[in-house]
Length: 579
Image 1 (tube, rainbow, N blue to C red):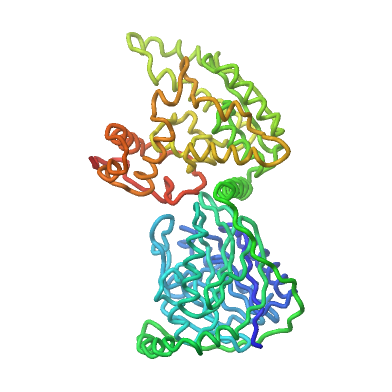
Image 2: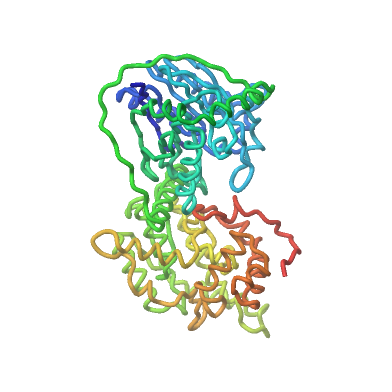
């Protein structure tokens, strides 16, 4: 029986941490070798981290990454490793090093460079032109990178036509809701269509706004999922793959022979070259078979992404403690809970800043939340500075009606106070605005938008409630007070204020925002979906005119298909109206 022992090493790389990433790679190589793996595959850009952005434009960084690759090569005795890095020839390439037994056997250059959504690879890299097939322990193996596998007639198709039996696809595929299910369906199709065993290894961890969810996978030649790594945590998936099934599949599928005849002409073109390289294998000790790691449900999946994204952003940027303004509302309660889960409650500071309009219940709710989570909590009333500001503004405001200007003074006082605490003690401020508020500008610039990392910036308000209720099902008792879940949302900047005074109910607002912001639906399409004309026009106007606010907002974790910032980029000066 022809078998190959493979290892998928989903590691948490940090952009620019060449020394630290190298250490992670070497540890995983050692672990894979100790389990008798013939081959270990690492994520795309595992060495420099992903996305590297303009670091690619620094020649010294590229040279340093190549120097650390040479160090990794020395640690590959008796094993083959596929490692993502930046290659530098006449240009820069998103590359995979194929290393065996202390020798750099070959380098694969990524062919399909994504340039949409959060990706800007055309800005940095030259596309590759070769689709090599390697022979490892008598097994024909094709290697390609991330986007390459998404094309049905891409490198995997060409490599399979050149008799590849196994395809190794290395990835840094960012998370958004339900992406893993779509990804699995695509990979299953690609494996079955090409009649190959498909090894998919993915990065894990947070990097700025992005979170990588891991869940590395192995599919057989029929598209059946054989193994899946953990979601949102480092993992090493080791298993034996049986090549006999691939051989039988090829014998029973005469279409493949005809496709090979067609492909010979394609492969003879100057763009593509098939090369074969032989590397030897090693001895295999027994291993324990690992079953499929179950997928998390939707809300648990999002919550895990937010925890990982928060933890990694704080730790990777060198902060240790965070500060959150606790208003007693649902948003600040959820952010504080995520931060406590990510960093430990001892590293989360809460501050209540009640004004003359804050209800007694809000202060109590904030205190109970802090006690439930074990946070340090202080109360700094803002009545004094609020009164002083109003007095200072009395002359220029004379003869005018009170409006949002007076209301926002309170928010900006809070922003000043919380940033002063941050400045004094080195605590990173986590603002608590959600996606619904950011979309329509229901936030105060230089006030409650102040901070360093916006945890729920891409979380619609209705999902905020779902996440809070989910978190309350964990542990021995709920941590977010029931009163917080039940009270009407309010900024409490004027007497008896409610969010619905300024906005449609969130149950109505969020579907419109989904259609307009994430799906780019036209005005007419939204009306055909049953939304009211006057509300649609109002929301379109609010979203469009608040682009300038969002451009100045802190970065935050992407969890939807189209987040503000990296995904959705519209001009601030923009006169176009869709109605």
